[in-house]
Image 1 (cartoon, rainbow, N blue to C red):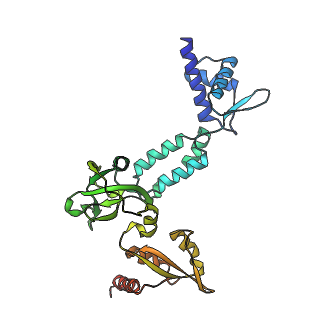
Image 2 (image 1 turned 120 degrees about the vertical axis):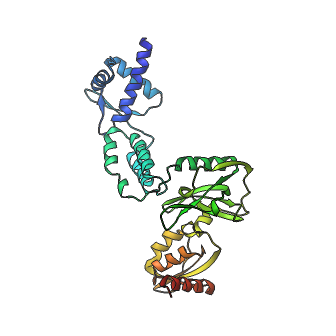
Image 3 (image 1 turned 90 degrees about the horizontal axis):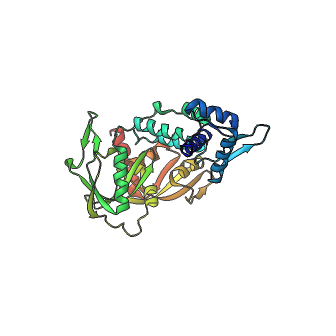
Length: 325
């Protein structure tokens, strides 16, 4: 019986140290004794608590001591520091593919990893109510099935939808399932996508995970091999907003103050040339699509398409359609 009580006391001591102490909030042996008795009616004495702390430190727990007339202890190293948890919470809140309720649940779990002394600050700094979120509550199960299929090298079958003018979900492909060989799950912008070989399209395709209607069925069919030379990283760099069409190498003439915008979109590896002191030119491979044209227009006249001519003509058609002329 005494041995069982000792194990419980040891675990409760660890719980207090992990959850409620840090460098700014250490705790003394006397305080630990009082907390153990007040919360769980566990009797403890100085020598037993000291012995428990020594055992925890020997087991690898990073418990620091501040030497004084009454030594005070705190849990020093954690899996996540508060600043790291804040970054993860921001990512969860920003991800539009995660529903509001699941974002709240996941945020609460992340906050629980912080000591009590920091948890309230993390809760105060959340901004979830102002975010636009997806509504697909099956998102975890969908992601889990896709991840399992990737790991097992199998194809999946799923129905896919979009919103009609009446704001109702409409199944695409005539309601028939798409069959996909999933290669990776990737986050692009605010959304989460699965990238893979589509049997229907006969090429690499992307699908928004939150637009998958129901949990994908993992088929007992080996996934199609990746095309030779296919790179997910290069693919996502070229596809604007994951809208995949034929790729073209496009020359862009940019004002010098557009460099931040260009690096944000194409990365630091762009190689500019400088035709004059006010401009630079880049040649980039992009997915020529309405989303690409919209991006160029957003920064016009600071960014202009120099060529090829067929892309310039397509851009002019896009602008005329937008203007209704």
